[in-house]
Image (cartoon, rainbow, N blue to C red; front, side):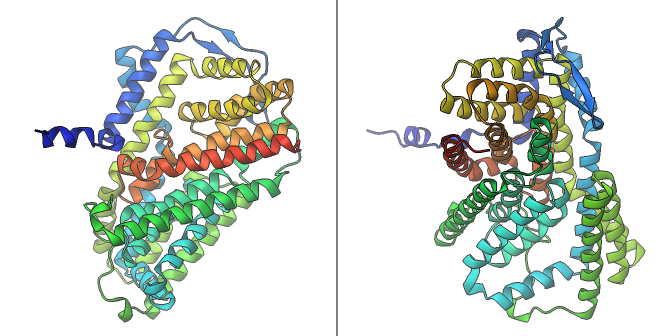
Length: 470
């Protein structure tokens, strides 16, 4: 007789064993600390170019090991939070801003009115359109700069009958894909072109095709998931997630924007325009963006005629909602601190580059992209990874016969697509927290798509080699 219990065990899927995100990150912290004992420490020399440190090719040397002690591993936690303080505060500030906007009812009424005008019967079209809208934000605005936009995706997904996982696919997924494969990404493509001495953002045609293909694949994936959970709600990965403040409170047909809603919306839109101007013209980054989010929060509260007490209480409540995500950002950054303390990041980059010199041309491009996937976990910053690895990878690419444009594309694919599942990427953890989606649920949802996007991108990479893309 068959034991039904054993059937349940054997039929469990891989994702049933994904640990809690905190457990997962702490496990990586332990592994990184242990690696500092077993991997030889090494370091490239670096030079300052335009105010930024860049690796000097051929300068790698092994140095005396600097293993991270048991105490040092825990000390790294506080250093990780200190390093990530700017991202942590932008999460808190965007949470407060959205809390005030939600309290004013502007966002709910705007989303409800939008869905009413487009029509709930066109819900799949809404998913496709919004996937591309958020993707365009990733392409043009950046990554962490879009944190405050995530709750809008949550409200929209729930309004058409979806769940928070769909909301994350529409917003977090699209921003990540758009940013990672953007033809005008200043952190990866821009930095890479500077290092390779190519025209800034050259080769944008092929990159635009790859980016459009990635967003189209994501839009299709989102729609398929939406159809699946509408047909069988028990298959929803987000059925038990907290949707307080995200759900619409009345029938779609009754929504309309009041004059006060339009005033609050004007405050928000004006703030976003100022933010974009500051980013592209003045060089603003996380600190200035956080300050602007706080200004928008106060301005929206005043415009909505909320009392000072209501604004204060809403701010504290909102901090409580996003605090777990802010904690995860600091926790993830600890991994980078440990790798730097152990001086093993450069060792890994050097050995990966050495391996490429013995692999055939087409294979070397794929392995180069894979090596950047590995380095992306160790150095989640796109520009930081470019400055650390491309001065090494570009000469290796020249040696094996890759054009510099193709080498940068291999780097961009390895860095950009794997951002979808990178537990050490503070911006990803922050945006998922704004959507209230645990990292383990996100992995279950997005991993199949990520694998598909990597394979599709590799096809384009092989085409680039075949045409001698320059």
